Length: 496
Image (cartoon, rainbow, N blue to C red):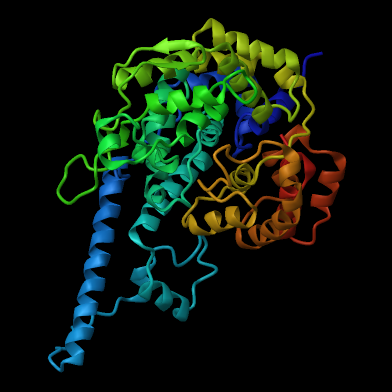
């Protein structure tokens, strides 16, 4: 039975996008599937065009220079203390005090409410974020801006999916300033491209090489290995096989992990040093590379330096187990915790038939009947719910820090997954955080101005998805802020 066009439009926006914004339900009601497909057909779908953001190499070099400057300051302070003991020290000039209002460009929200106190502003002026954290926050702002402003959000949701599939963590110090660049350079260009190209971009990116310790992995029989007596690291090889491509229990052995780890020795980064133009960027170091043929997953690969690793990745990208693994994860993320087997097989077949063409696989996801008939039982992850709330409230994001803090509170800190397998896509993982969502919804309702009446709020955010219970609860609210908070906590808004 065909769905009502507006119902299908609202379903599409919540299931495949970040929820409605403005009159989105009415705008795409004529052809919801076509609207989803059109978004991923756009040139540069999923990309962020912001020349102010640093490349991965630039971010690594900036962070390195920052650390060197901090080190120089510590050495100077130590010298001053030593000189003071000898009575020869001169008082160091004090830095000019900064106007607190200039120290923080985000002193107020969109409406001028919630102004920081003078004491808070002075504290922020005295303790601005360190440069790596500043880069992290700038990248976070760009990411959330893209999600809030997009018409539908399907391409952006795909970016978030793949960024979690190929996750890194800002909790590993050197990767913090690289997280945004990693997503922009290795994920975004390929969400509508080939899986093999994304795989290569991800596994050779400095952020991944640092996060999973491959930058220092040395072949035991390599020139560097024999001279330095340093060892092999298997972390990246294991996670590529187990998480990024084949999946668990797909037939590979520990010997495969070890052999593959040897294959990708030498995949490292240019050493970070002052005035080195390519420091922090990907490099292949033949002196670290294990110089022999290796067998991975039953196939022998002759030693060819960098090309040996590329060949293994290319074969893993087109392996049938990889197709099944990716299909299952896509269906679970967008449709259901236990997705229909027919949908998984449909996506896996399309992956195999198109040699991992992700645009074609995504089209199959959108056009599959199972993607639309599955019940709306899947709980949105905290980050998705936060963005949907901003879109429903018509908020222009001024300061990203409260949003980052909200993600921390809800258990999904940005670019900080608990393990290399990323954040869970299972709804049960996030059920315990609903009480915290209520607190955030109440604060959001109090701080976001809206001129919409209760009925209009419901139509904008949910339309025909809203139950009579939700409509009644929102309408009976004592104030517009309370009505908005009730709407954001409604089961129909929480699920997709």
